[in-house]
Length: 63
Image (cartoon, rainbow, N blue to C red; front, side, top):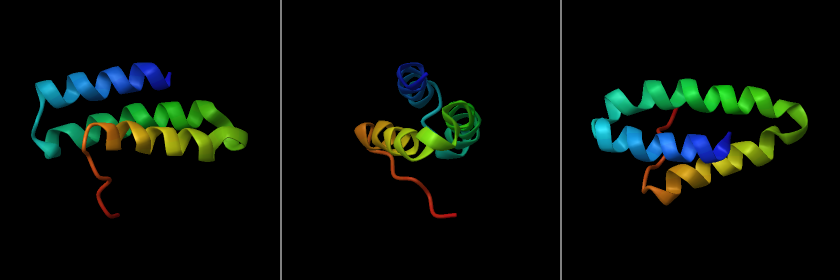
């Protein structure tokens, strides 16, 4: 699931370079991955999701 998310991030950035268009789609996709991880793997998967964003030069917006 993480590999697919990474691919979708790259494609999403190419298709929608506007952050306002990127974030809602990314949030939906990453939430599915995080939910599938379950509580025992949540922290690790969360750090991997952050690493995917950093790889593409994206910083997570402040809540």
